[in-house]
Image 1 (tube, rainbow, N blue to C red):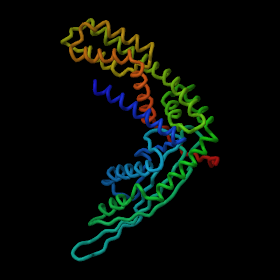
Image 2: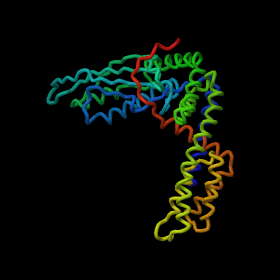
Image 3: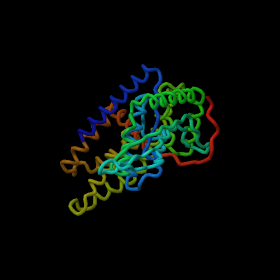
Image 4: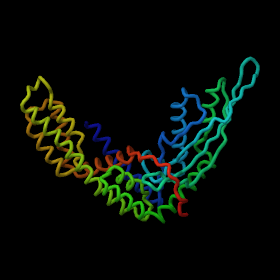
Length: 331
């Protein structure tokens, strides 16, 4: 547990440092990427997972050369379509050599986070080739030949970043309105994720950050209240059941350790429940409880946990798919 909180602290400091650097740069656009946005065509099924992961890592490296690659939900997502066009073989000496000719299409699109559809902001295609002693090796080599520092690829994402900058300059308020609509529908994860995706240089960034704090406070209180019902049940059972028969203490502490101290009112009520059984906690449970009490008394630590949780919500959220065509973005 101590290592966990040390990590949380380091994570928060790194994020603050990153934001400071972004502020100095004037504007940092995040282009989001996920393994689900990597599409493979005409690739043998046994190679699908390995090559998708390899291409995902290559794409992330390329994006990081020109902006910041993020995982999760944003108005903008990098999509890669890798198509094996042909695979041919030739005899050289005693062995056959296979040559794979492939095409990589990169797109930065506005994601479908409501019913307005999607729009491609920028796209490019690149021919890739690779050779090997068999078909699988040749296809894998084609992806391996993709260089993260390729000037044309880096320039593509730099240009995409400019287009996204222009989008937020013209549409920042609209993004705030839609994030607020998610809140009204009690879709807290979507609202937080959308607010969190707005880059620091956007004209509505400060407003988005302030709003995300309020949404998170509502969200985490709601989550806590749902878990408080379970916690009360375990505490009640722990007070009546034989300790050696079934350890309801572990169950209660597990729930408590997964609650956020940022939930304020509900978290304090949860702590009072644990206090009812505090005297009967074993050594490991008592150590865990002492750490939780220490965290809630440290405002800075609470803020670190809050930021980490919001980032996790943003990364984990996946918007529903929508194939409705969208109008071209305003430039």
